[in-house]
Image (cartoon, rainbow, N blue to C red; front, side, top):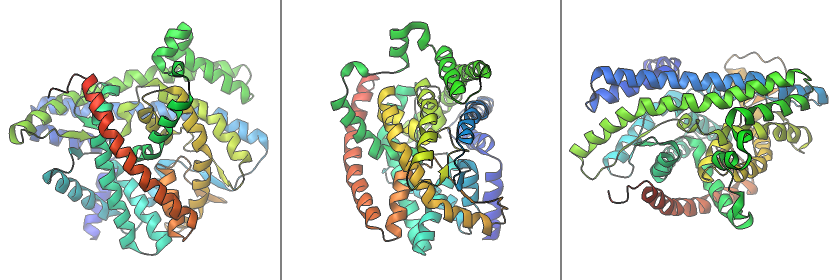
Length: 450
């Protein structure tokens, strides 16, 4: 078992930007793509991942740092520090049973493909860590590792089914054929989609804001770089940066300009592999429409996500300072992708609805991060991590509402049990509704005759 653990850990240590291209290279060759084209496509995928991560880090080092200055100026101290998703999942990999999740996910995926219960081949092995995190969380609160893995298996199945249920909507939003997104964050749409439907009844029809409509209404002020400049400058002024606010504005404008450019690399990388994979499956399984399951950054070229993220930052910081029961200071994961990217899909890019959902979810992110802080801190200490003071946690945790409900239910809290029941009911409604949404998206794409 130790050898197996070392093998998977060595693969994990390569990082998503190396590991995923290797997987895609192998898939490309298997499905009949010429080795040269397969290598080029796989390497382009690695370049795309590095590019997206560089811009996200750039945003954190500029907009994020400016926002943190606002908190420091407030003089309020919070005991749990958000360390971001990467250290949190890195800690989860220190759990003694973590390496077992790789074969569990692969076997379940292959069984479901063979039995026709999924159309998604999930190559996003990097996010196996998210299932590890769930299993560790449930095992910690229940004291039973079997229950932890059962819940993780359910998550794996739901992620695959969610990818199946949104593949045409993802294609419509990205322009990339033959891909799905089995990332756990999109399971939050079990809750976000019904919220979006309710907002459709409340909001006037003319409030269907997206990047295109904003540009049409306000002209140059709706361009990505100009919009980023305006938002960044305002955040800098609020943070007390004075003249430096103008530089922050240019930096934010730079980020919003580069995201769509880098995002196009995903299409460049995936189109040849997707076409070859679909041709391969059609030859062997004429009625099978297989999609490749990938990480969320294939949506990253949509500016609505980043505008929502930036506009949520000041709300998150103010809320963290005044919210009763919160002990968490948002810091490492201040770029709140888990809500905004998922809400983008649920709201079909409607920026106003995305912002409303994101703002409503800020307290949930704070409370859930505060709840798991003791658990993560204990794991960090056991793994030999030296902590300066206080606790560490993960603000902006993927599927925070679901994990928090499971956490509280595992602790015997009636609130958690009721919340789990409500989420289960919403899941039935969500997956039923997605059948209709997919049918309509397929028709808009002109694929309904297939």
